[in-house]
Image (cartoon, rainbow over all chains, first blue to last red):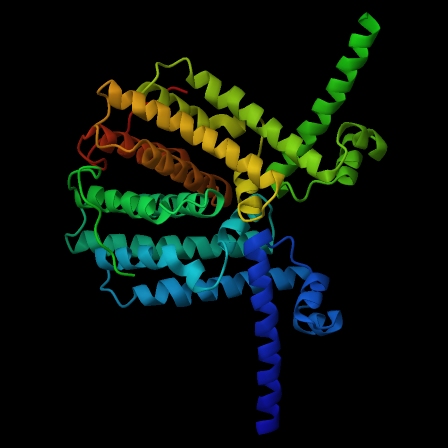
Length: 216
Length: 216
């Protein structure tokens, strides 16, 4: 029994090590650039060893995407659950979302890479990406609905529209941060989100409003 | 003389044909998926014929990106110049931007693919992408500055922030349109941009404001 659990644990460690390398590589060069051979030489494992864990390139890509989602949930979604549902949780989720790649030790966002690669290519990767993106949108929309119910947001706000605009701010933040290496990217994103929140609350448009202070 | 110009013209036609196939493929599967061999079989040309036009995969990728930019300028940027500089030109540019891939016969936006692929990979493709993205931001920022000077926008608006938010709306629109196949993507984008314009003008936040009607 103990021998069997040790064996499983070693296998899990190896798998985690391969996935870590895969996620790093996907963040830099995308999921299409992942190969069993490339990861074998990177991790020092044999190709056949890798095949034992991931039977094909596609299984490896799907497992890497799952691992990316797991890390996002761990570093952005779950910490936000500490804040009460509604406006406060939206603020917390946004703040953690801005930080999650850094906290996960990633040089860029693999979900953005995946979006560029698979949005128009039917298949399991596109399906997984769409499922996860919609799940995140739904989490945002649920909290917008709660904020409306609590009177924090105006009843005129559309939860799906709020999720649409939130994703846009994050996408633009990655362009500023990664492509432009702009140190102001976080401030720009926060200002845009503050304006979105103010509009949702029916307050004066931002630009005239100081951005809210957020403690991630 | 006439024979020579016919020869040049034929070469240019061949090059245009190759580039068209390359841009289509880049829109679907990204620029990294472009290969001389793949395009040779797609266009019915020989590999050596393609090498005569593009000496390497990287030259082909750069030429394809140039062609994407040329089409964007032709179908989105130049038509917007018909509107007077400032708020009206921003409205026109945004409306044309939402339509340019369809007008160019592309199934998705190759610039979005390139962003996912090259934002964190140093090299000529990243440099070209950054240059073109910054050029577009500058065009937006210039018109925001004009709108402020004309009194159309409040003096509290930051041109770079406006460009940041505009790109975010477009990026989110592509996710909705291509990944979600959402027929509401254009409406969502227009509503977000209307809110951005209203905030820039110092008007009441949208949600309470009907979206402006834009004729592309």
